Image 1 (spheres, rainbow, N blue to C red):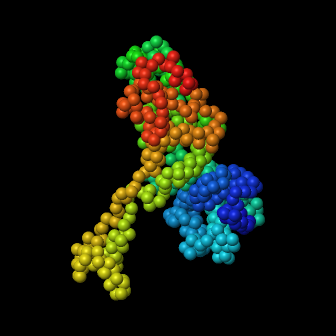
Image 2: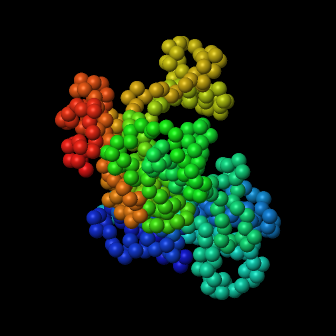
Image 3: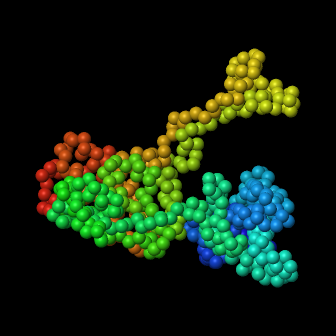
Length: 522
């Protein structure tokens, strides 16, 4: 990890030598939001620290936002500042060339060298230090340009006096950009940063440029549905409540709060289901369930969709139990923790993520070489040495098994489809689901729920939220089918899997109130 300050101090931290004891002072420094961590993609880098060391790096600012803001300001500013030029490349080396007039050492042999060696070479140290120092120098250059545009007096200030204001200038310029994942607005149809009347000062970012899109309205409206005997069934949103009225399936009892009484007997009103149902009857608060923050919240799927989408319908029903609200910071932290469990599942069940086995389509390297050879011969034959031409022609000849190459051969070879379907591909989520079908699918559901409680330690979870939610309902449904019925096998796979054993007596007329199994389960 490379750190540098505006004074030119550079520190290289050997993370590989710090496990398992990470210095508490360094952790405090990284988690201090008032200390800005500026660079290219700092949020991406901080995610590694979160996974490996459980450190929540805060105060990250992506330099590319300042580049875009500077370009936007200069486009309408004085010609001497390069107005009208495009933002150009956005990598660290490209920005270093543009703003510092320096080219960084990006030799792949240094990048791919052994960074866990006991002692780094001088070139490794210089390579690592240059990256951090270049980032901080680019920051100073960008802040100075932005402040020159906002205040014509800046160029005439003595250098020591300008440096005295530098810290203030940096913090004011970066206000509103903290911990935002970079998204280049030029990729959007209506791209561009929000205009600012005072360039260099705080800038409001459009919601679409945030790493997460916050809700524009409340998730919970707490409208109520009643049974014909006025027993509350659940809370819902207004659209669903008025749907019953519009279809003639219910009548409006109250407008504030919205209450709709159904005019038909809903299925499944057993006492056991009502025990789980108590969760759905309560009024839900529109706050972050972890910290209680009541603004800028996002829906969080406690059981990630990549797994739940493979679940049978009974586990997909009422999945709102596993949808909670989190603020932006808690949502980001929870996703980082999720990556840890996802990686653990991948290792346990041999379901690698981000490897060649984890893609639907793979590239055939031999076909690619044929296509490249034909393309080079068609486009650049005049500039290729004769010895190289012969080598490229042999590649095409061997592919078609011919002695002489025609223009048609080259055209066909240059348009080869080099992508082939990966026959061994199976989505990570599906592979994990198939593995839990042997031991009980609900165990995967419960594992994710417990993971959320253990890692996030939420203080504002709704009453009745439970790791074992829905289990009693599944037991009762299973008891309604004979021992050899296919539906019974479905519920068995949910509970204990195809390899497990479970003894639930067949009792289709079972009274939930007096059922022994019901009371044992509760």
